[in-house]
Picture 1 (tube, one colour):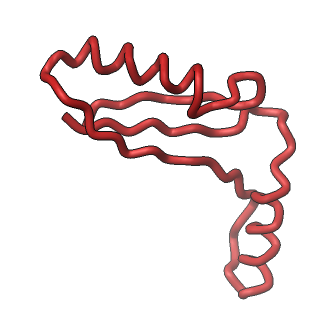
Picture 2 (cartoon, rainbow, N blue to C red):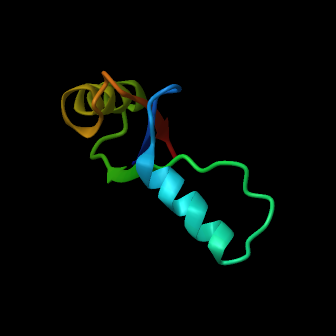
Length: 79
């Protein structure tokens, strides 16, 4: 089965890369951009058919490796 783990910075954490992207978009003449926050997406293929077990394993992986839970949130989706 396929899964996606999306990691984003928590609200209130400064995002210098997002600010740089925002500035670049404006310098390219792209209008209407109020702000940009960047993140990470992990597409993971999981062996087996037990959705609950796969989701639990991916949450464990996110807690231990994929996300810095002090400054980042994550979301696990089985797709």
